[in-house]
Length: 277
Image 1: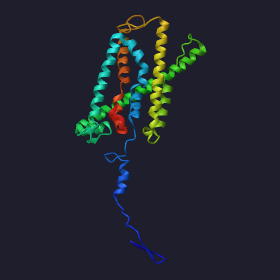
Image 2 (image 1 turned 60 degrees about the vertical axis):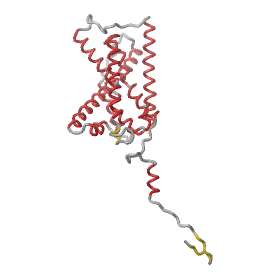
Image 3 (image 1 turned 90 degrees about the vertical axis):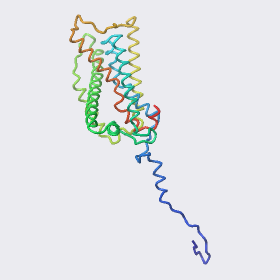
Image 4 (image 1 turned 135 degrees about the vertical axis):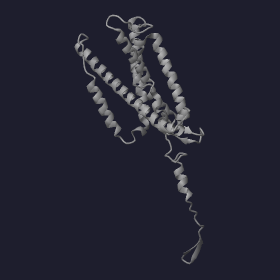
């Protein structure tokens, strides 16, 4: 193209405009299924998993083992560990439908069920999943209220001595925890905050380390490992009904500690490095 400038002509090469340029730029921010590219890494995926596994469920494991004994307690833990490993393996295999490398991604548990089973099984599995989520939410609420009440009792013992029973209700703490959860749930894209699971993982390691340290200190103070092979015994202060109830409660506490698989597919859906974990 010729351009006149004071009588002189200058040849300017034609400029190429491609409609693919914008698509190429967008492709850098999109995944292979057209969704925004996952920004997570191996480390953020690991933090998510650590937060889920070393969650508040570990706080009641010592009590659960004391109720079941040194035989049934570790056996139940190994049983649930095997179940959660098998479940997690199945869910990881269901993350993509068809080809494991290029197949359609399933970003939620219901997407995986719909892609692999379909039909009325989607509704059935959905009901089971939501019932499980409700149970886990109740478990977290109870565990949080028990922990807060334990802190309140410890303060009471320090102030009034151990002769004071320091009785208190856990209901206010349950309500407080629920209100905090409602407030946090209103924060937009709260699950997208990358540093949140890092902080949660550090906190999980912290209170797990505190619990382990207290256990070791108590063992040294007792002069050895206490407990029995069969757990609590029926006798003074413990009836047969109470033993059965406590044993079932211990089963529930251990199962609650292994509730990681509920969010496995969601972790894979957010993190690029989740497949390598």
